[in-house]
Length: 230
Image (cartoon, rainbow, N blue to C red; front, side, top):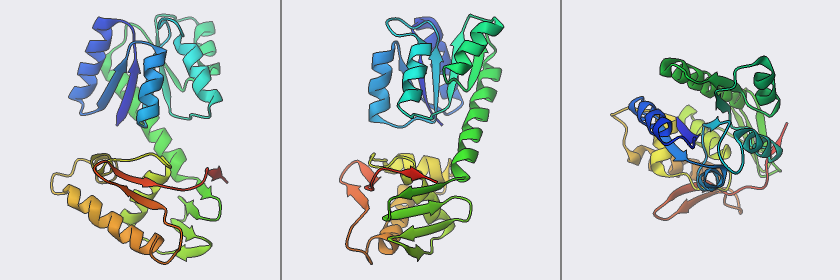
């Protein structure tokens, strides 16, 4: 799981980052909103952890801004505010969950895992359409390329699905290995390259326009038009 933590308290931020990394999560830590936005522009995240009282732009303001930009990444809000009114304000701003300080780290980890599972279930239950170029049905596991049905193996579908979740963004081989294959020690990066090769043979070779691009030294990206959800 790739997590962005936005927390201005140095000691607490260090502790949260340390605890989450011990769980083998990948964690980026920003002290304020502008730095957080820079992280978001460079890489996709599975969950955001936002502290309410960060400087310059509050966690609530950042949360609202992200939702206005149609960023649906799950958000866990951290705050010392514990009244019902505060909780309602945070949830109405677009937060998915709320954790009051001081908190138990086991509870934080449980909430993060729940948000991650919820995101995965929502993602798998939808159809993604990138114009006529590519349509992916996560319920029936059907794929259409320029209107032509394409048969994919389970692993090929998983790789394509992950790339489609981050269109036009370069995904490293390491990211693909982690997100699709998980922490299987018997799998190497060669498996990623082999699966991409098979995908390109099925999705690109028969067509004039090529959508799976190899960005030398960085990874792969799906070059498609803006997504239309149906």
